[in-house]
Image 1 (cartoon, one colour):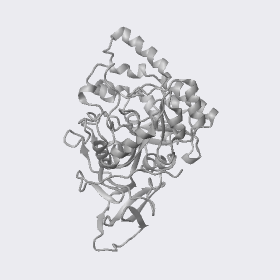
Image 2 (spheres, one colour):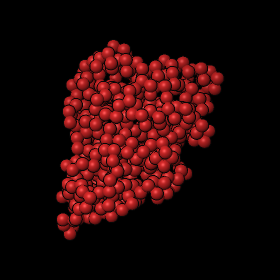
Image 3 (cartoon, rainbow, N blue to C red):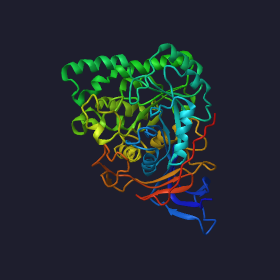
Image 4 (cartoon, rainbow, N blue to C red):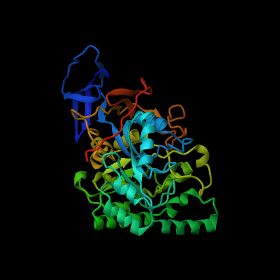
Length: 447
């Protein structure tokens, strides 16, 4: 059994409040939360959290950890270790691995890998294709996070573009359907136009012209129309335009919504002005777009038209990223730096601490019906992160934990620092160190 942990004098951010409290962890659960708690055993580990903020561990609902099949880029072990160093204690991984996770047999193979290597808690999505409807219908919703559909091509070529298949998936499945929305015909037309001018060496600044606002809005609006028609539970991943946010309603109670949305850190942080400096390091699908789009996304998040923050963590090697535009892959590593970057936005007055916890911990738990996680509550799993809001540090090669060895934030100074991370009651990370090798657990769902 894990030794008990007593966290004293923490400023607890939870369910819209910030309160100075003690939190007692026994084994893997939170046993008590009170203004003052005394250690009940001489073996209890006491953490003096005076001046630190305690949050539930973040739940990242969209990552690409590359295993199996793409382990030259990353592994579940390497990226989950970076995640817990960044205060992310649970993740949901996408199906575009090799082989693609489009059957429950393939998904269970990924669960088996994670059970032997993941530092964080884990679940996986079952990928939809043009020809696996029966696999999606027969999947047990208590054993998988949800269904992922690519309505625009991206890494892995899992495009679902048959209208009849899409209608059947939306009509006949009862899990959360998470979608990547970009209109393929629009992208192909835009890409061909630029290739006629530049060949394969298209300037990276044209990425948001090729994967345009029109491509995103057309696909998102169609997905919402189809979900409304078929009564499906839809979650739209990684919004990248201000225009798209107008498709979603403001309601702080995500459990009342049948259609929800997500924004990723890179679309909240970067804009097209950063392409000259960072090049393909910020090439993502959907593309990072204008400063006005970034402002619109931030505003929609604050107004509860966007429900979830995620990373879409998707590492590639430096060599792959150095390729010309048409062969440089989209995606970048973010899990280690997401929470501290969001707290930087807090320092800038963009988001409150309560909003960060709501969108990055509470709402992913609510939206995916994650059992006993995502909150600081008695009886819940002790997935916790302690953060110092004023302990500046610089991202550099010596402290980047991603297997790919680079970050789009390299050289950035962040004011906040993750001091301690607990996963299932075990102290897995302490100020740059990993005191013990621990393993996360398979997420379970209240469905």
